[in-house]
Length: 304
Image (cartoon, rainbow, N blue to C red; front, side, top):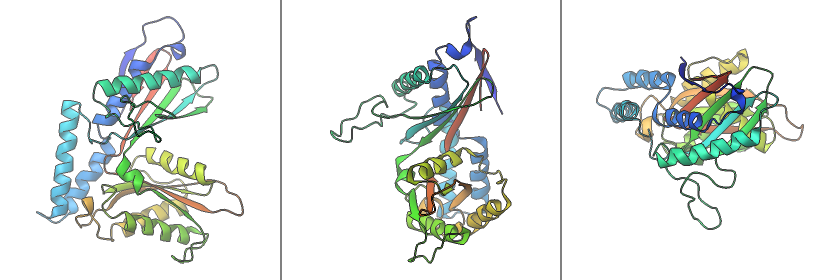
């Protein structure tokens, strides 16, 4: 579902306008409004847990928090995470200007308490205070042939980032070879090791192939998929469903309290790789799977 927010009040090309306030609104939506597909998945999970169990009570608390955050336009989680922007743009748009506007938007969103100050200098330990710093926020640009600009935003919390991981196949300890069975084994290992530390129930973005960097990037981009969609590749769709079932048989449950719901969705993608390397990257996203999108076409801006 998309909602038209406003029209740019200018006769100039909208792609050259200052979109800072539009980016602030995108951040607000991502930080305060859990996507509808995630909320449906959480409610379904709640109904599957044993009545009165710690798992059901944890999900009740999560759902109450979701409702309150939406109503009050306040952050869903105290850790508002790393803002990760992916921008598709047509030829002729200044990516430098867009990046500057995004940084200003992050600073404004921090002032308005949609984001918590999260950008810390790795050498001094000093917090910049406004969510800007060296390569912070994270911004990826991809030129496309379609009309207008599309912006996808993920807010990736630190707890779930800490339990995200990468494997090299083959892995003799897990008996994992360079095939989909090997992928299955390392993903189950990753979820088992995470326990409740990733604020389960989580969503898994799994990238097969690439180099170390592109594999990690792909795994996070997969988190933009709706939690209830199906992979277009039959063999990957089958593995997604199998992993969803098997991770939920581990008994870790919401927040590690035990129960039937450890993972809400599994999303798998592939990249070409070097013959010498076979990486599997697992991006673990917590239940607060905060993502939002914005599209600018002509003088119209819509959000999803």
